[in-house]
Image 1 (cartoon, rainbow, N blue to C red):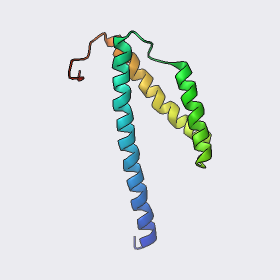
Image 2: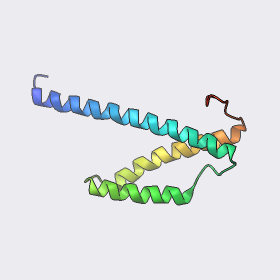
Image 3: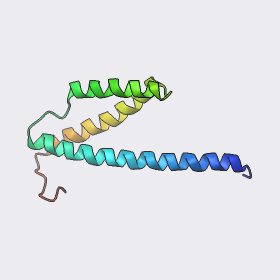
Image 4: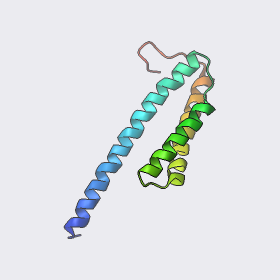
Length: 103
């Protein structure tokens, strides 16, 4: 493809996509720590109040950024569902985290 402008747009998209993956990886590292903390403290894997507050906040942010809030909510639900599944698996495992934080 010889269109320089299109190539520049695509490079920017590639950079944003890479940033999204890095941010998701960081989010899942943090939520893994939360999952272990909840298991150690015998807290439930899901905090529905927190979940609803977060969704409300992100819906508003999406609107203010010109992003379809329904799309944003579907995306966030996908992420939250994965986190909840991970927290439930940690709680079921009954294993304690090692002192280094690894499994």
